[in-house]
Length: 346
Ligand SMILES: *Cc1c(COP(=O)(O)O)cnc(C)c1O
Image (tube, rainbow, N blue to C red):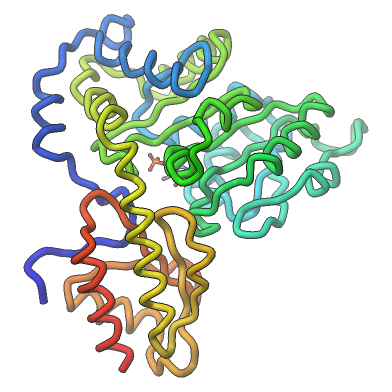
């Protein structure tokens, strides 16, 4: 067993690099609640520029970014259209119901991606019997879809249908920069049709804390109220926002390495009897695989044996294991992981 944990459970496992820590330690700070933290302000301007929006707001997490966006866009009783495996449905503790009192209309996509027909079908007629459809929320890349990228034309077609019906649009872009690096399509192009977009700083970008929500100046003014109301307004937050500034300056292009590592891992896994995976579906830094009867191991058994060998992956679903590559995973780690998997499944 190697001496450190090879943590493929999530790209949230990234640790700040020594250079990032130094940059954070030296960042100028002020009172964020009074808009007086220069590093928070710098980060917000950088992200607003990157996404082609008027303004942006630094928040503690992408969960809060999504929940504030829903709060601003909806009223209690409204309905939000989302793909059924989306993050806010499964991993935000019931936030849309608890915080915004909204219904979710889950549409069925393929690897998290659906078409304009699904939206058209989900939109409720204007009739007092029905909840009022208010918002469509997309996720790019799609986590449970296996880091899948929304094809630009499909995304634009979905947004066009939503607009035609007067709906608001939110993009959960926790991993948007992975899509940007994989396709070469600028972030602002992906963000253009949406009223609000969030970016996660603490996933593949490698900052320890934070998310940024962007939109029109008016949207952000409203979002700021809810940031305060939800207890997310901070003080000398520049010290953590600096991690995001550093990440955007230094850790975007390198996401391509994570994608290459994920692809290599998937191709290696595909050659191991007992594993079912389609490497051609691995577009970014996330991959899912399952075990066939030939494996003669259950998913929990495999997870536990990997752990004993110093490798962490997680089960998401009955027969679905997720591996995520990131800043702290080297190509040697991928080869080590494949060697251990071959041994365990022999
Ligand atoms: C991780 C994630 C979030 C939430 O981010 P946190 O900062 O951990 O709250 C939201 N959406 C997607 C798609 C994610 O992967």
